[in-house]
Length: 292
Image (cartoon, rainbow, N blue to C red; front, side, top):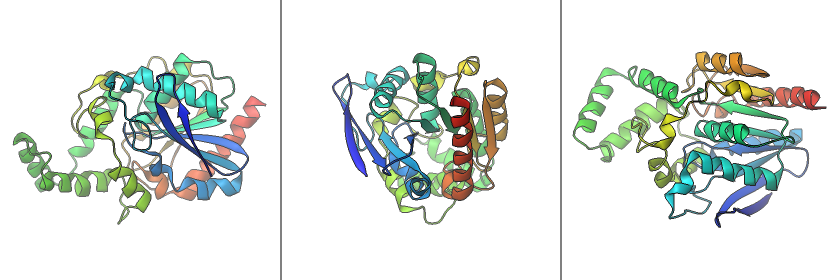
């Protein structure tokens, strides 16, 4: 296991850690924005013995990386630039992106040459943030009526930071649509406790139902067809990206496959771990043949 802080051109450092000693290199790209690599902590034990090195990368402002005072470095374009520098330093064969990490990866793919990249895996994000917002609001509307009523009352009273509201969020929103395992696996708990709210505030807004910030205008539905590398789309039945979103990606991409795992929510690779890993390995084999 090798830890490496990569020095960016902007003078800051970002944290990476490589697990496994040899084989195919898979770089993970967390969401949030502002979460950490800890959400992927179950993957090395599943993939290292099968010849895949799992590489963690904490984006700028996340818990294990530098926190800059200059919040302009949290722009989507800058995050794509930073990913380019990390890719140049680590030379992964594949990139696995989740949620807001998908937005970063797509911007990188549309901005830079990436001849050495064999393929990418995308989870948890439609082709536009507006569609993601629609999904969130649709799921929010399915919450039990008493829960939704109380959340509305607390939001209208400006009490979203009160313990009662935060507890409702954790139990009824994150515990319902992010991961239903009880308790959450310790790495997911650590990831959540390490959430970098300054990054979230300067990108998407203050919470799951606040859609304010420069990243909220992201919409690449007209540009998806420009992505030339093979793509594996993975969904989960209880997640925030719906099957209709994966189908839309699949229709527009040049070379893609999609799969809905049998169980799981937004962090569904914790519940469907073997099925999830099987899809990754099958895709890696396919993409290696395409790139041969």
